[in-house]
Length: 465
Ligand code: NAD
Image 1 (tube, rainbow, N blue to C red):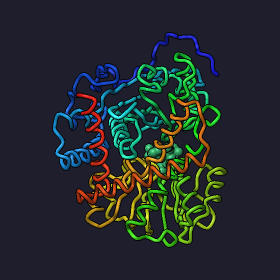
Image 2: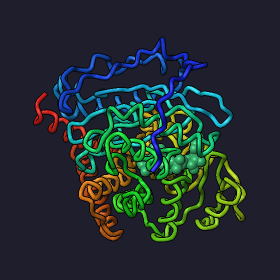
Image 3: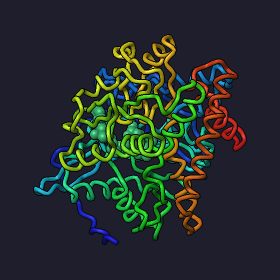
Image 4: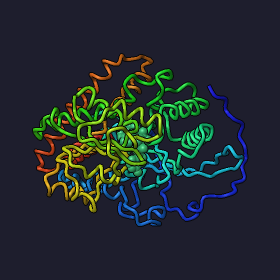
């Protein structure tokens, strides 16, 4: 276990310029885990951080979908206001000593959206484009996701605005420890449980767990997605990808697609995309014709070989150059002539400007927020089905819940038990989302939101507002 470093007073050479101007809300007062003040910021008001740029705001998309669901449910406005926006937002400044001796000041966020159904839960993302609205959107999606798969958690998300590919292991560790100690006051096994997301992994979770344990005692249940040796769950690493494959299998039944005959393109070849591609090809006999990473993609209409793609990535740092394949861009991959597209990288990939070019019949959202509201409307008008992120990628948080249960009970489940529970959860949740969308005559996305919002609203009401 790493030793706690002595506290050091640092003179910040470059205080972050956002700091003085920011209008990010102060943490709300929370008493015994329950809110005692109402949210004062109207949902469409942008923070200074988001107002600075005119880029797509994913939080507005989530709010749009929430409103559609709330309307269908005739949700009382006071209750809607309570569960619509985040409970608490924490912005932290992280002084990190770089290997060259220079001190960098890096910004991080933890947004706790809702804990009506249980402790806040959600991953930590390291990316240069992380901002408060992205973290808010992702935190809100987590509330709806945990509700859909009916696990006793709420929703949260964390993010650090940094390109981690430019950091050494030592720098990454110092950054992770600094972030953990700054959010230490609001996380905990019964309060808020982080997990990996884009550019973070089991090692990141090991550092977080260690840093938190220094002040709270050995606490494996404070994070999920840990290495197996530190209390991680068997099957957690592949869980999101496996859940995506179950989602595709169930959707194929609804839309009468023969898994043995369809072709699939997967955007992103990280944790989620690579496990999805592997399980589709090696276990389900589905033809994966294209995969990509941040540098671009590869396409072979006769099907790729997963093992070759992994070796290519290992040997060269990208899937590009895979033998027998044509190179293509990430944009071209989404517009390929194939039956199913699985975005498994970042958000905002399927938009108003490219949705009309998509040729697939079915989109299974492995990534969070890959489809904008505008694109959703185009897909609906073109009869292209979308299996929404808040259901399709919920396998990760489901097995995170199993990991937490094992940690709390100091007990280990075998791999078969984890997989069988995941299978049950993903299958029954698909049926529930599909039933709801049929009942209300809405898309699978809005059906999923209705199901989720109804459960959260009921819990909030029962606990007392
Ligand atoms: P990861 O960091 O392991 O992999 C990300 C992949 O996307 C890499 O292949 C990377 O090269 C690629 N990528 C990065 N930027 C890109 C760009 N601009 N265009 C195309 N490709 C790009 O991350 P991950 O854990 O696999 O997460 C992928 C998505 O799945 C994210 O949206 C994440 O929020 C979501 N998700 C992850 C989990 C999980 O358990 N890890 C759970 C639910 C949802």
